[in-house]
Amino acid sequence: MKKAVCFIMIAIMLSPFAGCQNNNDSSLALDETTAAQTFPSEKYINNEVLKQNDESVYSIILKFGDNSYSAKLYKNESTDEFMRKLPLTLNMSDLNSNEKYDYLDFTLPVNSENTEIKSGDIMLYGDNCFVVFYESFRTSYSYTRLGYIENTQDFVNALGDGNITITIDVKE
Image (cartoon, rainbow, N blue to C red; front, side):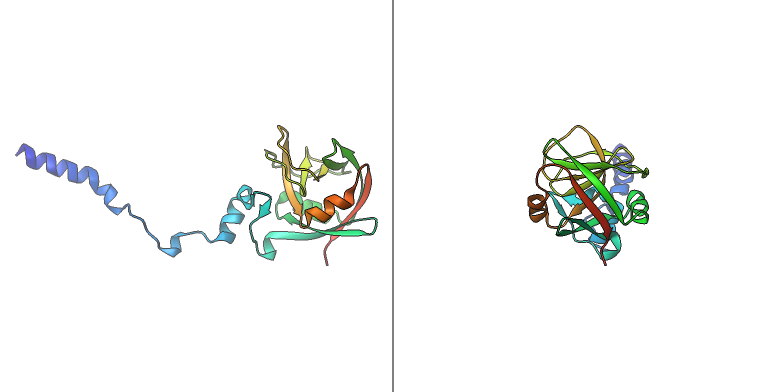
């Protein structure tokens, strides 16, 4: 009798686990686009942005001198507001030989995170400091990730040392 009761108890205790199995039902899996939109910090891995459809990013152009460079901005509260302000001309100062920055005349929503900086990153420091990085490094500072320059090698070479004036506009 004790064995039968023990067996029944064990069966009852293990029954919730009977449904746990490796289910490859595709209706339960997130596709890459949904995952990228749901988990924005996962979009950025090893300085490469996962392939996204055009609806998940804004396309912009950064111009300085005779140079024009394409960039992508992630669609979020910060970039939605930033796009409403374009075109913008920024007088960007050089800092630490790894970034160009300018303080905007307006504030943007923030979603700061401590992150590794990659060459070509476009970020927001605080709620109004627009930053473009041209060197990769680790930092203890927190930034709101806005986007990235598409061709970082040419962009970094063209930036040069010192301050520059950059015009940012929607890519047509």
